[in-house]
Image (cartoon, rainbow, N blue to C red; front, side, top):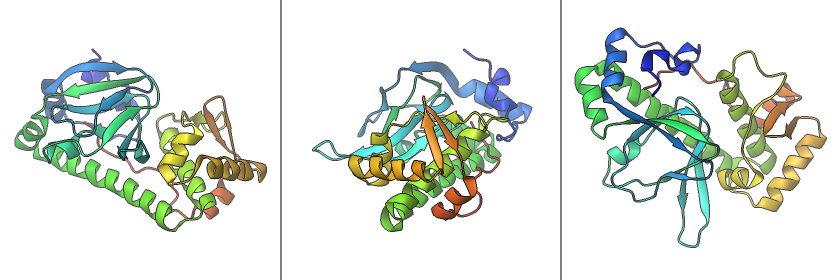
Length: 243
């Protein structure tokens, strides 16, 4: 198991450092690490016994599905994201979580939220911040699905995921960033058909805005793509806490 003080995420400028007492608390509530293969389900919809997780490495997504198999991806999860809080506020998980890539998770005891709030109230605020931040990502996706055109939806997704991925790989950008999404994932996340997604992405690529090759995303005209996306701010994720 990776010692918490040697966690590679702690070295990144994206994440707010922990105090010694906070780090000791994280060590005490961490139970193990879990490796999950790409395409496996970490949390099933309706599951009642899921622990809490931090995604240490890899990509995943939260989703809800209908009885006929149709799926809506709510948001995409990258390293540092805290998973399972929503289920702890209810009787069962209202959504599922599936991995996009081979992934590594830190697994925390089920009553970790109570321990965090009781022993380190400042970290309790961090949990609140993380859940509010995730809600803001879902809100932006709802805006895309409800009001943005297909081009605007895809441009927004590419900008935001590029910036999030770049923050986890400082110094990158010219060589692209990891981007394991298929066009089906993009369609399920944006409420588009697969055919419409394919046509729109090819159109944006022909305009010289982006390129996706071998699981990596390259932004070729960031300003034009940002104007099309019309996102609030520059899309860069704020410095943030993590558990």
